[in-house]
Length: 234
Image (cartoon, rainbow, N blue to C red; front, side, top):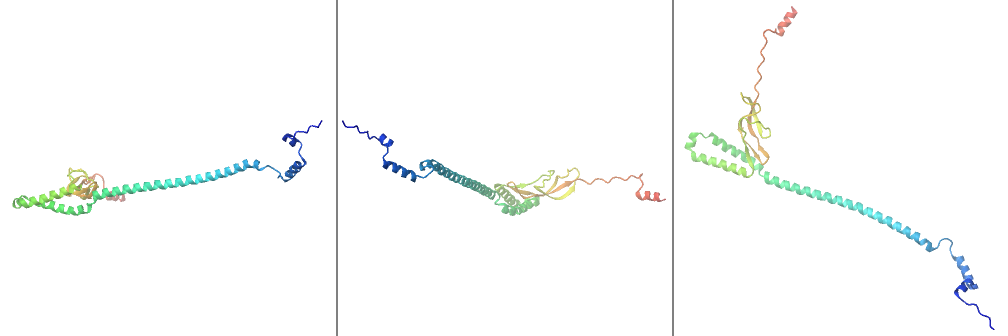
């Protein structure tokens, strides 16, 4: 009867290695480096790379945030400057439209003054002799005032007794007038003119001032200083 051969299974071979397997395992153990394996180092290396990438990304984001803030500030300043330029141009346009004829109007005021003086100098006899001529002068004066009104040019004609306004009137003289309140207008020598809200020419006026105070009467009973000094010396 033949003897039974042992089963050659992987478990049996692992438990009973052959001499060749033992030699291979011994060489592999001598060649294997000491310390952790590559597989053990991979998680730490991945974490280090991820941390470095995160730091670089954070720095890049911070730089972009700073650049964005600078660009936003420059944009806001540019928009504000553009708005200021627009408002300034609009204001200049309105001023040019309203006050563009200031120089011409100021030159035409003398024409109005001459027409006004001519009409005031005409008496009844001159009106009877040259009525149509004076009517033409009056018509010219009215048309000039109408043209002034179209361009917002209005006369400044203060009334007698009106309070003096240094912003609209120019005092030519002062005189004490009985019954007149000091600082009020007593005579209008020449009318003024305004264009819109600006003064073209002030009205020339005379104003009342306070009358001088009466001199205090001397007391006859009180001795003079010279008499008192003479009495003291004697």
